[in-house]
Length: 251
Image (cartoon, rainbow, N blue to C red; front, side, top):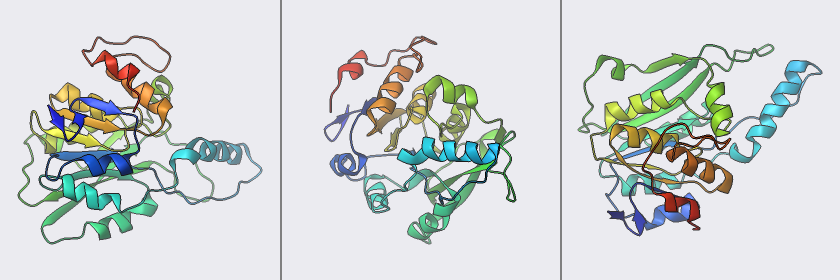
């Protein structure tokens, strides 16, 4: 099965701003994506903590410049009904809410509360990450008490960061919870900022169809391997039937 010129249950090393133009209108059941964050840049103090923050900013530099919000017009265009999850930084929340403000769209702020964040000087800790869920009022949600929680608590997933070499990777179980609550079996889930592939892995494990796009070749290769049960160190973790030709695909 295809969506426009793209095969379902496949991922592509492609610029999302161009790729989404090729996705037909009203063809996607859910968009789940972790957009490039917009961070305020600052200096550092002469402390070990200050050095760590500088190193973190360098690590995030290539993926933290924010995005062109015009892509949200295409998010709406390709959606059968609005059912969109967007992970973002605190600095982006208000702009994104304003974009999707509509009497026919419900909005929920979902959070991941990290139990072991690095301490910050003269500031609140960075112990919460934010996911915005926009949903048309007649878009169904599935039952399940734990699925309905707006918050999720866990330590920083350093093991996943190390295993899949991505600095902002989200917990797989949390992504699965969101998708299990808001999608149905065989629904089509799209991620236009795929990173290390968590959305597609979660969709596959839940019996949802998926399609993903990632412009960074390194992260794309990690996502392909991950869907084949191989981590960033080349170690096989589980057997999967993901199409092996994805490794050779050049888009």
